[in-house]
Image (cartoon, rainbow, N blue to C red; front, side, top):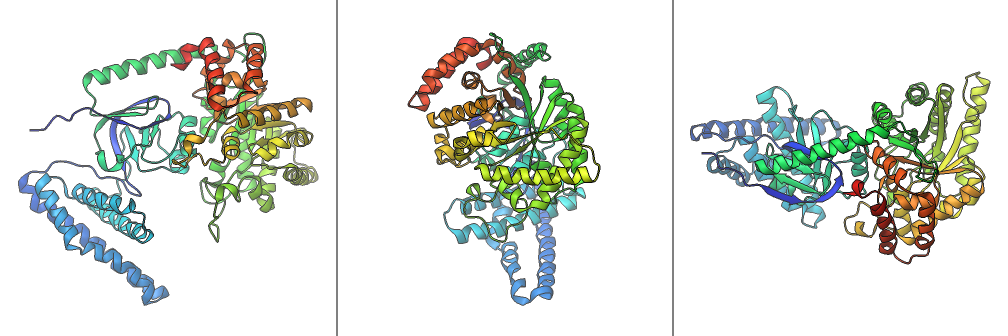
Length: 587
């Protein structure tokens, strides 16, 4: 008789808002958990035989690999696979899996997976570099064995379920998140990650509910367990009761209705209640988000992150291929503006190319405009592509990770060369295309006055500005709590930037996560920023919230904010105003 599972709530950290329902699909490090099902006692010998056959096929594969390597580079290198083969012949391991099949009446692949996962996770949690390297070897063997179960039984790798599910993983990279199949993945939960990681930022941008920091999730949660993922509170509810499901269905419906109500103001201009105009734009990564931009009521694109498109295939697309994508963006956004951010590779993002030596600290290393200025041919090719597309709509160019004036002048010089070449080639483009820079490093904020004389706009990238100002790696769980958007130093640098732009008669935007934070919005309105660029899912709420604020009241509040001595003091001021003006949007 099947035992009824009890409702269990696992508390993590809210990553991306939203509620999702579905069975769990667990992905361990590098490979998926197989399906688990109960077998009958008389099936035990057959399951043990399946396990034995999967091991035999894997041995044959590894032996062939060893011979192949020996032929290519010698006997010593072939011995690398000896350790892998020893795992397959380990009698302790084989006995444990056989016992798991017998005692738990589980299918062979899941019994193998469960035994190996427990062992691997124990090895990974020991702070010993040798054991961690051995864990990687064993991980590789596990993948091969599981694949050989799947190939035999299904005639394919069976890696991705073809039904709607909640993805549970140890961790996901930004590119994993970017390639998630939205038709099947309703939300995801990870053991690792922080709310400020690029993976979670992408999830928010794509509107995928997400939770991070679910310790032990990969081991403790079983594939196919029914669950509810609450991206607002950070709860993953396993085996929910009928009452819990009904409660969450009601919450889901209420939020859907609230969003529908916000859609009634979709076509309105974004204006504070005392008439201060703000342009509200969207952040996107892929052209398939363009319909969402239109549906959200955005007045353009404030940030088109090109690195995901440019590097997803491993190589930079050529000029004409890039121009085709940028032209699509320009045409579909016309007459509104779309700002294309040039390649922002490096750090924890997709690398521009394999490095011969790993950087000791990538976040303070070769990334952003620094990559472009040392790969000038690639940079010019991207600029030429953007310029070509500018003949078909209103585009802007934005340089990332600028640390001072010299980089701005160098980038503009390359842009001038690209323009001169296109004139020579009689290729049409917009000669008045707006050029701006991201202010995301304290040195750039301090130099904003000089930089503002050279460009048409400044856009504050708050994620990195906060990180570099308070010296906190936002994905490091040991210090992530010190990452404070309302840190007085951050607010003062933002105020300096906006003032510098205003003094030069150019506009300032904000395109980081702060732009989509309803509690902090009164500060941005009070600073007098001209443009906000946010994820499409939050855009209607931001538009509604701005319409409830008075710019003069927010500016008055800023007199206290700018002299406040602590982050909590500033947060209290801005949150109080937000709660007075639009409480219904905060709960």
